[in-house]
Image (tube, helix red, strand yellow):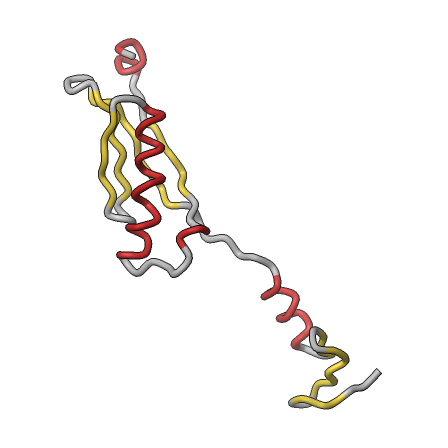
Length: 109
């Protein structure tokens, strides 16, 4: 096995350094996921529409059903993620849909 020294460490192979960098290498090889963006969802009873808002993405949209709303958010969010300079890989975006509901809202639905 051929070895060569790099900055005081011994390189054993293309993927492996012996020493303090070992932990760092293992850590960077793990995919880190960021915290999901909070999407607040509510039902507007007067307009009979579902509304979603995400301040971090600058997202506000509405739809007739909850399912249509979540589909719409997933269509818009990746584009806003990139346009607002929040990251370069919108495929890794995560969303957390949070619905607030009062007792009267529950009865109205």
